[in-house]
Length: 403
Image 1 (cartoon, rainbow, N blue to C red):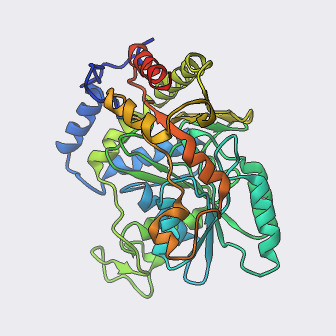
Image 2 (image 1 turned 120 degrees about the vertical axis):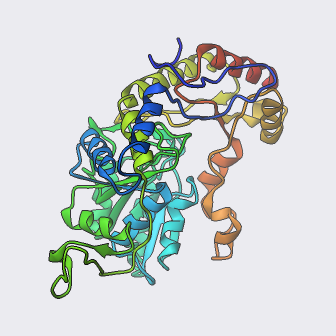
C-alpha cells in the first residue's frame, strides 16, 4: 500500500544511504495553492483565514471554540494562564512527554510534579494518580491543573482521570499535541468532554502541519475570551471588555499581561488545507501501525498496546526492546539503525531527569516506570507518506541489527 490519494510535492524517496526520517510532513499542490492564495490576499496575519482554520478544527473535534497560536508550546502556555495558574500553584503532568508539558507551568511561576506512567499505554497512570492524590490531599499541596498527555496519539483514560480530578477540584488541560484525529469512547480527542481545555500541535512531524503552529480548544466561553486576549498581548478592541469609555474606532486597551502568540494567515491557510486530508492521513497511519504489528511479531521486542476505549491517531510507533533477549544495548541498536539510513528517534527522555528539573529536586528513581520505558524504547519511522517499501526496509534493517 502507498500513501493516501495525494500527489505529494516532494515525496520521500527511500534510497540506500539516505536517512529515512522518523516523521515528516506530507504536502501537495493544494497546500501550496492555499499558501500562495494567502500571500496574494490582503491579509498576511490576523486575517479571516485564522478564523476559518479555527472553525475547521473546532467542528472536527465537536467543540465550541478554538484559538490558533504560534506553536504547541504557546498553546500550553496560554491555556495554563487562562486557568489562572500562578506562583504558589502546582501543575502535574506525565514524565513521558516533551518538556513543554511541564514548562508551561514554570513560565507562570508555578511548581511542577509528575505522575508515573502506565506500563502498557505509556500514558499517565490512573492508579498512580489516585495514589498520589490521596497522599497529597493530606498535605494540602494538591495541583491546581492536571495535564494528561495523549502520548503517541493514544488518548489517556480521560473518564477515570476526570472523575478523580473533579473529586479534588482540579482543572484539566489535555496535551493532545500528538492526537488530532484520535478518538476516545466514541468522541474525537479535543471534544473536551472530560476537560476544561485541550491543545494540539501542528509541527511538521505531527499528523497535520502548519509548519509551526498550535491550537487551544474549549467549550467554555469565558476561557475562550481569555485565550483570545492572552495570545495578543492582553489587548482588546471590544468596548464591552474595556475599563471606561472607548475613545473611538481606533482605540484598544491592554487589560492584562499577554503575549504575542499569534499564528499567521499563511500558516492557517496551510492548516485549513491539511485538515481536508486529516482522515486520510490517520487512516494511512493506522494501516502502517497494523502492518508493523504483523511484521514485528516474532522479534525480541514489544509492540504498542492499544486500550479498547481509544482510537489511536498514531503520531508515533514506539517499540520496546527486550534487552534480556538481545546481545546489544539500546544505544548500539539506535546507532546501527541510523548508520543504515533508518532515522529512529527516542520519545521521551523523562522530563524529571533533565538538568533543569534535577535542580528543582527531582532525581533518578522518582518515576521508575517512565525510566524503565525510556531505557528500552525506540520510535520507528511513522508518517503518512511512508510506503510499504519504506516500511519493509525499516523492518528488514531492524531484523539484521537484532540478529
